[in-house]
Image (tube, rainbow, N blue to C red; front, side, top):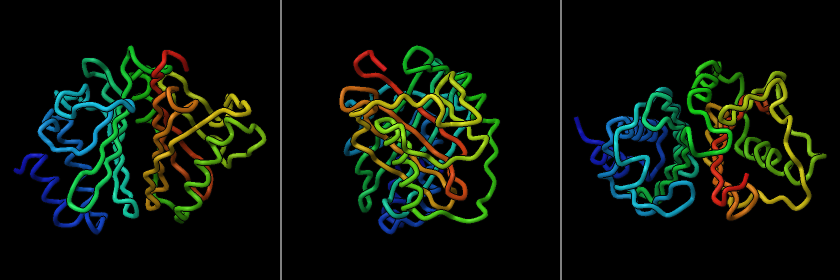
Length: 253
């Protein structure tokens, strides 16, 4: 069996330049296998960050040793040539929740960004509770696919609501939001603290129309606020599930 670096580099050279969905899926699965084995640190990554701080991929927190994964999910963006992997590891030491966006440029991994929380790091962080909420979700096939523009527009409206409370975000009832130990239902937009001028900046999207799921990385409360990974399941133009990993960089929410 090929190692993760060889497998992923081979996939990149063969098909990722064209962003073939099947090959992106194989690459995402290889990434999960590498996190499990702790072999990702041998991979050559042009740009790597952990919680939005520049890091050395081979010696960073997440990819330098095996992670005992309890749950994982991947989404594939054939337009932007990118993947997003969401991982819970409640039995790991330390327990973790991980979100990773990988962006490809031709046959290279141009950028990998990881946002992670532990039982001691992150807003409302509780990997065991997060894992328990995630595995109870039901995500069946979509009756119809929303457009990329629609999916991104709904996510943008969610974050725009933090500075304009009058914005209405379409959602199902129930719609569930998981932020560490915090579980919000049946209205997943309940409790959003709107304040004029509040900044949600540097939004980076990975969008998978086939499964109605969007990953977004952004600065929550602007640069120097919280490193933020949100993922959204959207069905028929309405929010169904919201996941959040938030890690303050200045000690404040």
